Image (cartoon, rainbow over all chains, first blue to last red; front, top):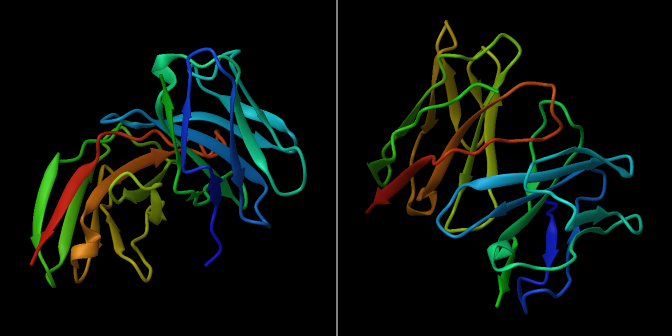
Length: 114
Length: 111
């Protein structure tokens, strides 16, 4: 079965540094998402992306965050200046369409900010 | 999107059916019921979804009550690999893939 691929699986960074998390969604999918899960907490929606623009974003997704689809296959999440509280597992997901469709999630990138 | 209520944990014997309940009494007419699961901090995995009719796929069955205020996910023959957190999510059609995860039900399947 096709899958969403995320790299790296673990990322360690210093507070204040920029990080880019990478994802390769399933090839025929048109909608892309980022979620995160702080250790022991709920999975939280960050942003949805379609047709090269953000469709919806949560309050968490402030100016420090940005997303991009730099080419036909990758989808990235950038955090400009990381904070300790950005430490979390970040999940990328994709779907064929945006309405009443199942999301396919990647296995996540564990981000640790020191 | 409507709020859901699930028991925090459930146990099931391997090979038996696991029946996971979910209450969503404030669900509105155009909202679907979705079930996902998360195995040990992996990415959530889609299981099944439905509007008002019962649904079945290779993983599970979804039974939605006639008034749509509650539903049950049935894993017909649970295995140890089904041990996971199961999330019941109600979602309308107005937001692109924005799933609101709650705490879910921790299902533990015992040998």
